[in-house]
Length: 81
Image (cartoon, helix red, strand yellow):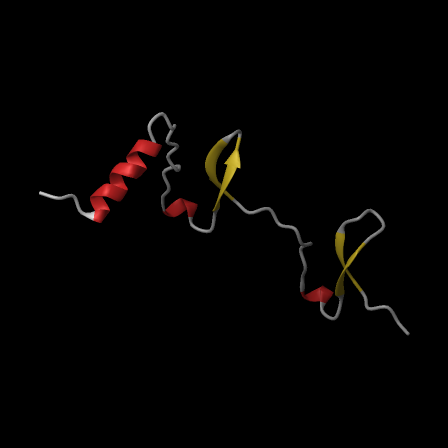
């Protein structure tokens, strides 16, 4: 019986994987909802995506996002003029 093209492709892939370490992804559950896959300590882990933007509230309405003198993102009033 002749091998199908799929069987040939699987065998070729298997040959390329000989000696390759396979790393499994971490187990997840419902408590991981909203987390992202990232590397921690050289291993895959589910974690919270760090926030790059400042926290804002309704008191910041009308402000714009800008960078302060320390190089950090902040909400600030629009410049007048």
